Length: 355
Image (cartoon, rainbow, N blue to C red; front, side, top):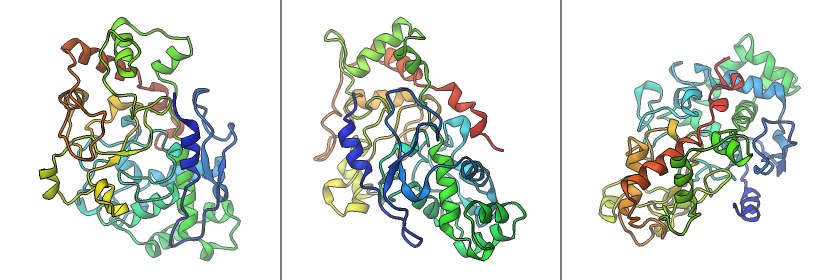
């Protein structure tokens, strides 16, 4: 159902990482290099200079869970991206080094390797490698600096030698931020989820009950006699996101005036982009509460109620955000379907846990 041509075109717009060496052009990863999703998943686009390697993934996994990268030694990537919560953290706003609060809800890292560049809620970074660099430097996240990080890793009895060997460096003095960013990005690209009950149903190896099937029809607008919840316009199969930036009516224009977070406008400078944020994936969505970029919806039912109400109209709000007229049964069945997107094999995958 997804417009693969548009997706591939967007993927080719991956940017180069600033402040470190270029990452090169995207290339499609061989299917054996990463965990396999269902056959509906296309090949993953990655920078040509950071092709997937098992040893790099393993090292990136260790660094992902290690607090050594943060300024206070208390925060790791996993602090905000917990495997049990589909690599989100369950907080409206994450807590970084020094107890500082981030201004947005931590997005889940489910299938993050398939996001065609422009990561974060506002699309302000061009690659997973750049995302690693930004998160380590961000004063509300890890609040560290690369001079300190590189020194600590160079002096570490495991990380220093491992990075030197992996990248065939002459010695630890040649260790650079790009090496750290590359291995963590490789681990993040390995976080492939595509084996939910919904996927098993699509493959003909599992059944959905009556409520779940009715919710599926409402989600995808499969039956004329059932209401259209308008979900599939933005949350398209197979990734349950179209990777676009939209205003989904969370805030009214009056609220925008007093809100310092403008969303996509902060990247593009275009007034029409104010209040737009990336459409998140709904895979494992039952595990990633609270919801929205600001964590303002505590439950999935609150999200459904928001869209059923039509949200806050604005000149640039999505045309799909409108009063839906869903009944209590419609909402309950839609919720039941969303729970079928939970992938227990992903949550419990030993390769994704703290080493």
